[in-house]
Image (cartoon, rainbow, N blue to C red; front, side):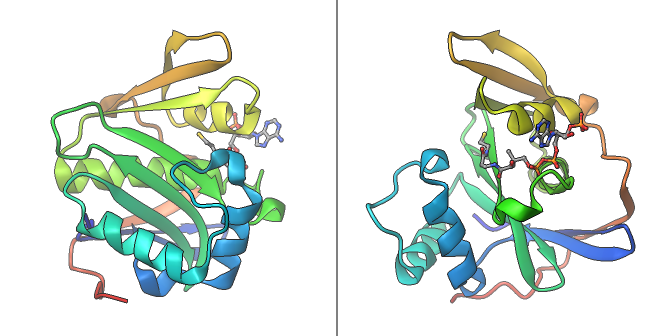
Length: 189
Ligand SMILES: CC(C)(COP(=O)(O)OP(=O)(O)OC[C@H]1O[C@@H](n2cnc3c(N)ncnc32)[C@H](O)[C@@H]1OP(=O)(O)O)[C@@H](O)C(=O)NCCC(=O)NCCS
């Protein structure tokens, strides 16, 4: 499903937007980043091509319950957030990914997580989110805790995090937030 709207804001004088990803946003850099991050991927083939990823993105857009958001600096895709079960009456889950390893640790994980939860709440009125995170993945755990998620369940090698939307905390470096509800030029690839 597409999120018909986008969130725009500034981080350190640079302009960012969070919106649904389309096939047109799938670049060589995005696919290379996915290939490097095999452990993070689910339902992936042995090797991902640009065409395979475009089809994957378009299939998510056609789905009734799942969404894929991108954090863009102008037109450059910096990070993604996948959201499952947005409208299915089940638990809504979310996972995050910063493409470039050199761009990690700079606040983009928190930014894409906060803004995707905010956008999905504003557009589909989703009031809670959950995520499963390996307890070895410190940047991921800290991203969830930092924007307001709490530990719902501790397992042997992972945590289940949960957020009630009234606990969502905006990262301090995000400024001048605008919710633009007009369809953001979304068309097929
Ligand atoms: C997990 C991921 C999205 C986090 O994004 P990020 O941009 O690296 O994280 P941020 O810079 O937003 O930092 C988030 C928090 O983690 C902390 N953090 C970031 N990198 C860290 C590191 N290497 N060691 C310890 N803490 C770290 C930050 O200080 C921040 O915590 P704070 O708000 O309490 O200060 C990113 O590292 C990534 O894409 N990893 C690979 C894919 C993955 O594991 N996804 C998660 C699956 S659930």
